[in-house]
Length: 170
Image (cartoon, rainbow, N blue to C red):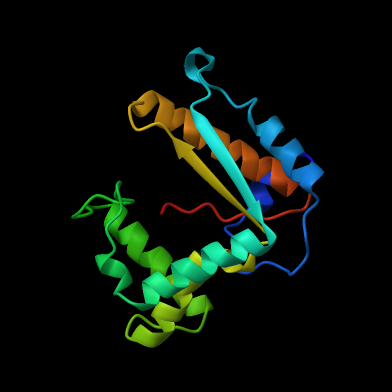
């Protein structure tokens, strides 16, 4: 698959097949993505690849935690969106949510269905590999931009091998 096809066919996959991905391929993808542009060659990312029973245990614990509280009240160190979100960004976000949940057969009013779908986020949509990508708290906006470049390079490389991804902020 050429780079244009990889870019044009990349999606945020919401359910993965129950097929393992070879560890050698995961390593190759991580090493290839490290060629992403990085200001001053800082390469601020740390990647932790998890598969098998450890991944199942992480998803079990995360799903249990989210079942015990309203997902909207969960506090994380970094917000994924500013509050309140302003226009035109708010409208884009609302439209995407309506389209996504509509495609899944869930409406905004269906709190149970929405909650079940949100739990799937914490189950990594059944992905055979979970990549936890972190950055040092002391680094700044330039390194966060580098991190985004790394994640996108990784997603496009995975697509080039016929694999899908679903980057998330947690």
